[in-house]
Image (cartoon, rainbow, N blue to C red):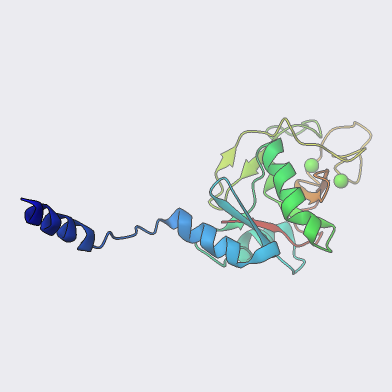
Length: 180
Ligand SMILES: [Ca+2]
Ligand SMILES: [Ca+2]
């Protein structure tokens, strides 16, 4: 009987248990391999590009190191704070595009209205009530006398403090935060 049990235990221990590599763990491993150039949070890996481009060019041509990459959506204050502390603060750059865009729902919306997070497939998500704008922003330069938004500055750059500024989507050039 004891011999049977020993045999059974041997058989059980000799069966190799396959290690299931999930895409999430592959992503976290890749993210960790980039050291201070990346930050893994909430099953996403955030990285920084180094080339200044328009938002549109960033959205179309940056963030291609892995599939399903896109300019980052920083959808909560906790995510913003973590990415600022653990990624942005380690860079010598000052401003980065994020995937926070203004899609005016009427001809004369207010400057604070109609801001959406947009993913790499152009799906829009809720507005960001937690957005912390720099003093006087969003200002939709050049300002118009009626004080309304005239569809000029519809993209956003973020500073390492988490403060945001609206800026042009095609006429201003900055690196971007990517999200994979
Ligand atoms: Ca605008
Ligand atoms: Ca502005």
